[in-house]
Length: 280
Length: 157
Ligand SMILES: Cc1cc2nc3c(=O)[nH]c(=O)nc-3n(C[C@H](O)[C@H](O)[C@H](O)COP(=O)(O)OP(=O)(O)OC[C@H]3O[C@@H](n4cnc5c(N)ncnc54)[C@H](O)[C@@H]3O)c2cc1C
Image (cartoon, rainbow over all chains, first blue to last red; front, side):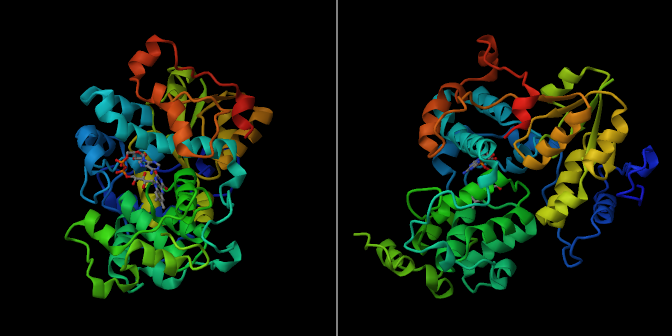
């Protein structure tokens, strides 16, 4: 490629035309991506096992099981598709994904799956209408706290996945290593950041956008606001029992390594939102 | 022969923008480092995007999109898939001052009127499901898939 990026001369060789590398040669691709990204932190050396491209998208679309999805999607090992990075970048379109679901099941069987696709459409519609609100609190927090009660920046231990809360650290490690985590893991991390650590959702959202292969201003920021309660009726939070129920054996859910998450919903509510009326 | 800007919200050649621009149109992808830096994209995100682009087997330019598109257009129309991203919209809007810019919608999952209340998802879903649960094939039969868009509408947010 030309090394004269930013040279605006009206000639193709100075325009940054890139020499093709073989799609099969990931090392050569990596070298090129690094060349294009001189501003990238030199410590950032991780690439995802998930590859880009249409075949990869297709290989996730073919085994789609909309019926099983409805009953298992909240489980880490449920019948989720892993299609989001491809949908995010338009490699496949959500309407094609919907069509595939309707090819292999009835509308009733596919309803839960298509409803999830519609969440994306919903966030997108909001973003199209109100692009300037995407980094702002859409509504007040319903946590008994004001925005100034929340820290502006993401603490380093969270960014590194070294919070000392075992399951949260495992979810963060997966995010940093692969750029993709299950929806439930995103909910757990976001709730931990906003409610346990009282950090502004914007700090968490910015961090997710850096790492998620499907990182998308609409789905990401508005989901963070949904957890934080600035775009929902109440804050989303969870307890260790819930993590245990949905995650299976690969995740450490022992009480002694996840202390801050343990307790009943009422007890955690009282601890996390002390300014609100008790739940029961 | 028109130019098609394949941007990061639609890294595909399987989009109505291809038909709209015609079979001789030239699709190009532009790698926008400044944008990735601004958004703080990690290496793995950049790698994924680049692999998606490389897979299309079309010319790739690493530079400012406005610069590349103005340099290559030479009076030709510039086609692009629609995007909600204000950054992409701004570039298309600037180009639209001096060039013929045509913005094309992808088939949408739902046909929900723009004035639908967007405050909570389930109100949206109640309207959306009528079309979301119907296969495109059947929607096309009922003439429900308008893809032509007015460029001014699409560039104003
Ligand atoms: C804090 C937080 C941040 C998130 N950030 C993003 C993001 O940046 N980009 C993104 O695409 N999704 C985001 N999501 C939504 C959701 O977690 C992912 O879309 C989903 O986990 C992707 O995995 P999948 O492809 O296996 O999904 P599946 O469960 O297989 O669903 C199929 C498709 O439906 C869409 N979808 C499913 N659930 C949701 C949802 N809740 N919201 C929006 N779309 C959905 C996605 O396009 C997904 O690929 C976020 C959720 C949370 C809680």
